[in-house]
Length: 511
Ligand SMILES: Nc1ncnc2c1ncn2[C@@H]1O[C@H](COP(=O)(O)OP(=O)(O)OP(=O)(O)O)[C@@H](O)[C@H]1O
Ligand SMILES: [Mg+2]
Image (tube, rainbow, N blue to C red):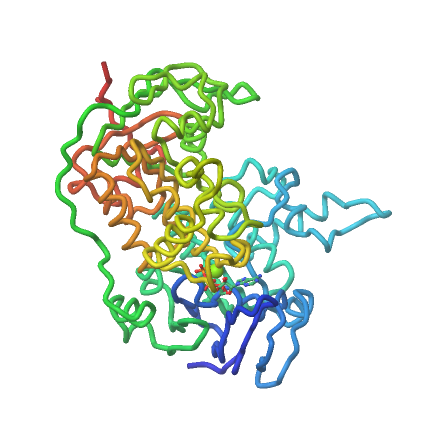
């Protein structure tokens, strides 16, 4: 193994509210390796990497760079050391071009004005050099997710980063896109770059990483050569028990249609069709999975079904009642619950505490003669925190202070507590650790068995295969394939439908 480039020793981080996010953590990175950082939700991975990138200050501990102790007080210091970070949620300016985004903050100017020509030339040169070809003049808004990812990495590379930290980079990619992305990472590795990747996906760790550091409860568990540790061992070390990866479920026996969509059309403001005469049903005791690359109409469909968007043509019914005139609350009262994709903006109120978030949609239940029944609130909170293993101090903790995965657990606990008529679950396990995925999958199947109709939107194919009774593939606002026999389709074939390369001709039409 080559020489150690970074060593973080005895790193502790206690946030202002007293939460210990890192407790004597340790990580050692060798030059030129791809190093995975894994651990349960709330284990302290993002915190450790934010400390390395100068976004958070450690309470105690030392960082060594090429065996010399360094203080990294800001991302600028990190940049100067050659450290770059790509956050899970892209930080690009949608309205600007690729080139402008890549050189943001270090623009090339001529007479105080942006020198467009030189900027584009430089970006083209950088992207060629790294084998990440991209149209430098394209506006970022028009890019696919994988292209945006490229821009983020090029942004780091343009700042001369030699060590690149990636916080859950593949959460939103299709299998093909993930492979393309990995090919780029391998190329960077070949050129001597060092990569640290945070991920919950064990197969990815096996595929491209050299070593893995596992954290638990803010502490260092161990560092292993990836080819000497199995996926099962990794998950055991992360969670402290065996994890069931694909849960058993009986064949579904669907009942009547709970959600019925007929001839649904939606046109974007720019006149482009987003949903093209979509028709399908989701029945009682059935998990229907909408699968597709992001941006192919799934999001718009969810917005319509959950009452956020009324600007469409067609018929959308829940239990035979048209929802066009129903607002979000009325739709919830009809028995629909919703796990939104964007949990921080729509799933939780960040400034409220866990209890308030858990009960916010069931006030009718917990009010007695106009007063909130505190005992009931407490018991709901305790039960949810225990069942979903929400890592927190207590139920009074503000949701803003939770790790990404734990915020998601609060939403899921709230939306699945009672048996809804229909659950719209949009990327329900994105960013959630393997132990919690097992729990959430069991919960979804349990709800299905109790009669809930489940509309699952997921870009995680192992989730799709684990849960779906039926798959509908979305491409460019169309349903291009309907798969009833989920056990007999390969990931590769599904990927071809998702990319619009293949299409089923005999799509089922509903009466
Ligand atoms: N700004 C903050 N203020 C207070 N506590 C925080 C803050 N950010 C994170 N925490 C807490 O620190 C702990 C570690 O969080 P961190 O985000 O590092 O976890 P993680 O391993 O990245 O988890 P995930 O897989 O869910 O992203 C959690 O208990 C979290 O609640
Ligand atoms: Mg994190």
